[in-house]
Image (cartoon, rainbow, N blue to C red; front, side):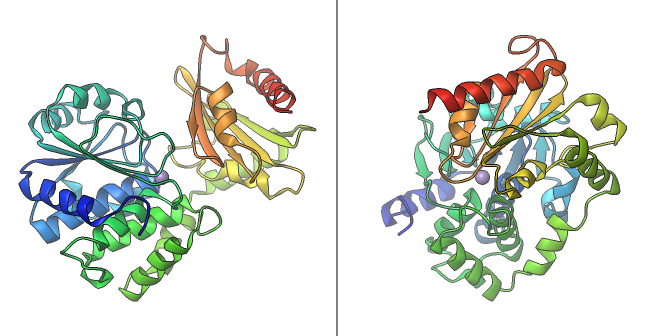
Amino acid sequence: MIGNIDKERIRRFETMIEQANRIITLTHVRPDGDALGSSLGMFHFLLSRYNKTAKMLLPTPVPDSLKFLVDESARDHMFDYETSEAEVRKAISECDLAICLDFNTLSRIEQLGGLISESSCSRILIDHHEEPGEGFDLSFSVQKISSTCELLFHILMATDKISQDASRLPHRCAYSLMTGMTTDTNNFSNSTYPSTLEMASALIAAGVDRDDIIDKIERQYTENRLRLLGHVLKDRMTIMPEGVSYIVLDKKTLEEYNIKEGDTEGFVNIPLSLAKVSMSIMLKEDKDRIRVSVRSKAGVSARLMAKSWFNGGGHEQASGGTLHIPEDIPSIEMAADYIENAVHSFFTTKE
Ligand SMILES: [Mn+2]
């Protein structure tokens, strides 16, 4: 049994779905492969196995790099608050069941959090982050697992409709779940458990085209992205004596290279390929704030760094946060100083 997926809770999961007429899925801001994969996995499962059309709601749009996940049958049922505020508000006010995927607190879904807390719908949480939030009628929260997609896979497998036979999963559901698990593990380079490989094995046996997924997530980038990466590695990466590397990407540079949402995905992981680097921090300027990504090797906590210095949190080795201008720092020009100070303090107070 994985985490708290027991028979009784699966029965409740099935009953809640059976009794619901207007279902929505919710996932976090700037959705990644796991957020979208789990939303779409749920959508296709509900459509094919229950003949129920869920509305998939997002705080912000699907990045171009992940649009391949949203097939024809799903397209008209996915709404983001930035471009379709009215539809999102309507869907939340009408829904009787909200399935919350890949986030642990309502603040991760921005304005949708306020709307959902005012709604009287039932709520299910399916998530793999630490410190799961309160206020859910049914909560599947497991941390020793690769991804929300993997957790959802094991839940669906335990249902009566699927009965541990992955070939009964709707094809697009299986494809979406495999994609989210693959992106959250960086193609099996982190947080890969025996249960993760069991999932991969079952889905490949069921006909999921893994080669196609790898092609879509790793081999479809723009030339600008690779040019920017070259520039960043050559001129914008600082390595501190503490074994921390950092990269600061200001708006001007992002515009110069015509960088779109999702284009810098994965940059933060690259400095960790150095033997002497145990933590990598990347700052990216965005409107009135700076988005922060922190990655680390085992034994160094990216989560604590994000929590103590960047108003964030997440997983032990992969976390994120935000710096507000001017509350936290006066401008992006001060980012390097801020990081240097944060790193010095972090590594001296730890001892
Ligand atoms: Mn995830």
